[in-house]
Length: 314
View 1 (tube, helix red, strand yellow):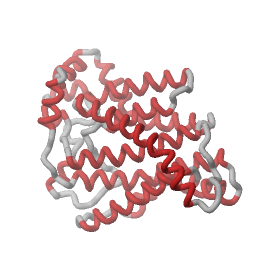
View 2 (cartoon, rainbow, N blue to C red):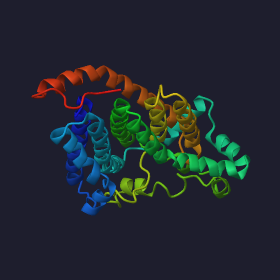
View 3 (tube, one colour):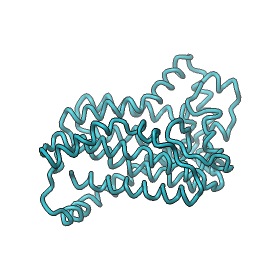
């Protein structure tokens, strides 16, 4: 296992422990065991393969992607629960501040919505499809990176996904926002015209956590918690970043990813400040990891009893 994968596994394990402590201390009920199994089902295949091709028959070309998939899946349940625990902190909403920053930058969210509503009906339908396509884009890029042998970039994706996922939930816990739709309340006509993914009623868990009526954490069927910064923006730009230097495929992903970012104010109910916050957070995370990487390599290499079985590769 590469040193970055070891680092990722350590971070996921630590997050799981933190979630357990915060959840029990906060008096929350955790999801049933079957929900964890459903969320991590592919581990049944990837986990044993990762172990087998690391310790029994070492093969870095198989072990690295299997570890990447396994750690990615292990991260999903605790980060969902962590987001809900942060949502339950019930700090004052910052929607008015975010809207004021948008206004200071010359961005009018309602004007942006009305512009979209004035376009042909297929535009809003395509916007929704594009916004919802993020998971499909993640799967496509993962397959591409695995079978093209770009395993280092796959590990990069997992690393940045984990770190930004934690940071986004942490920030939103202390700077919570109810989304632009909840703040501006554009009315039924505009809502029906655009049919956004994140619209009226989408933040039901967010408000239930804030008023204390939701005491059972969810993995399956959880609704939105995070508004600021925009994780959709982070994920779209991260996917563009990890396929850099891949020729035509980079251009396809670039156009697709930027299209997702453009839909976030409409279908994600995000302020422009949410989008900018996502860009800044991703940039800081990438810079921090690049600075930490050689130091982490020394730390994890010095604790190993033998050389890395699966060195990083391009």
